[in-house]
Length: 152
Image (cartoon, rainbow, N blue to C red; front, top):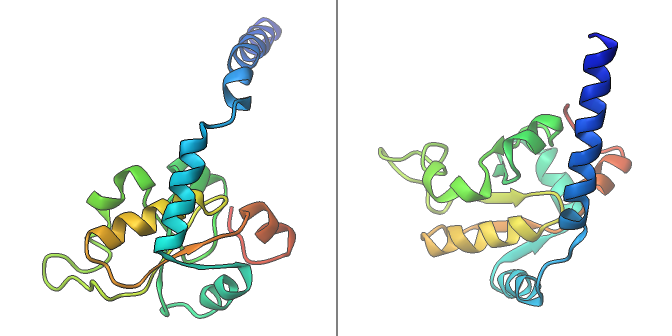
């Protein structure tokens, strides 16, 4: 890469970060937090210790990472499949056996970066008739720092 190209890319990245940083730094309206908290009251939740046991026991449950594909590609828990939250209602069917025999009672463990998207995803799947949805409430960075399995 030439020096001029490198300088141009650096300048573009700097301008982009300067423009978008305030957007990313903003917090969400209180209604978003309320929605997540309401979902967590309606679904089963587990923490890191219980999640670790499930990860160590492949086949006990279908682990679904509901983060975006680029987040999953940057690193994920081994054995987790990636179905982004925004596509979950449309893409969950293949892993659960549709159309031959949908396993609506199959244990589904929903995981994301912090538990918020997982909670909303678990609530959404319950609304579709899945009976064993569980959201993992933990920070994925803490999972890695604790030395738990993580694939990049």
